[in-house]
Image 1 (cartoon, one colour):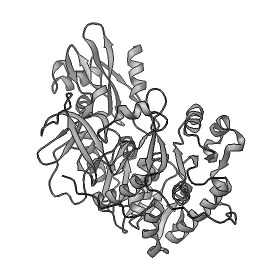
Image 2: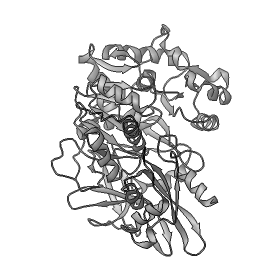
Image 3: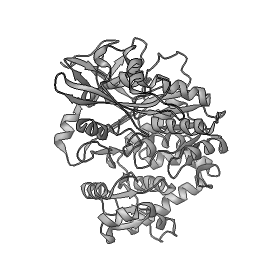
Image 4: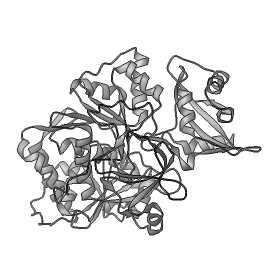
Length: 504
């Protein structure tokens, strides 16, 4: 059973941050591109940005969007929105012009803040009079008073657009209470204190970057080292230079770091790093073992969704060894029910669909009551993920309901097959999707990326899989790629691979 969270300790996200910042005004809160920001300067910049937003016409309940590579202004605008009672719409810098156009219009934002990196896409979709530049927030703030706002921690605060693989992205509405509780839950779960230094390379256009990987550190009085965008060489350099103790990413980031070091023949020890946290896609045990061999540090699994987070993770100071492939235990404040198709609860070691709530759980999908009703059940979010809990309270993600491949009446989990494929010594990454089969309905098709300096044939990989899996699970088609197609968050874009498999 998870440890309960205390009652909401602060009425706003800004008040929660002030509690950490006020006694640490001279300590470094943020490092970005060689520059430093103390906690006192951070507080001052929040007020300055709030005055800029007021000059742009933003007040209580008003919405604005921010679109660009990671900058300190992403944090300042988040807390300034809390100060004003406004609603912030963070957008991933990898969005295309049509995606920006949809998100801006759908969110009903009053204006779009952007940087030079995305200026072309911003100008192509948003009227000029509704554009503002992120760098302009660094100019002296206008001399205007800030209104006194009594914040409602349950009011709309963030509209976060999911990456999505089909149709338009989902618009997830979150409140300040959830953001505050994520900071508390994350700090408790990962043992974060003011001695921690977290390198953040995730896009701040998503909650995993803007909130989960950042707020627990800032609200504990630690230091965030912010990357403008992720690059494996730069990340490794920052780990060493700033003696980073925490890093959160998606599996692709860790694979890129391994590939970089293997290509350069580097061992890359990380003596100060105490937790490397991976989420967003299943982590094959062989990939985790490969990382330990190269860096001397284990990877810790974490599971959360855009709609509800955090849910499962490896906790700092865990004394009981987790079985291989386990995602973790419940996060503080999370609730999980594993249900059978008939709605009854599963027992230990039984697979079922996870229905969850986290310290932060969505209020609704913006402007979509029908989708909201289908996603929430008794206050819990329906994940679509297949989960198993053992008697010791460890949870394992075993697949997704929609991803299950049905071949001649047999169910095949792509996750299981991918883990077997990457256990081959030449395979770095594997993605398995379904393709039509005229006889059996569907067949598994595997897309593979080899490790640097290695090669494998389709026949060798099939034989490797056949020695470890039932015959019906062995992929019927294998394709080698130089690199995987990636979605907006850095995860493998299986939708693109499935379309490719269907055309073959």
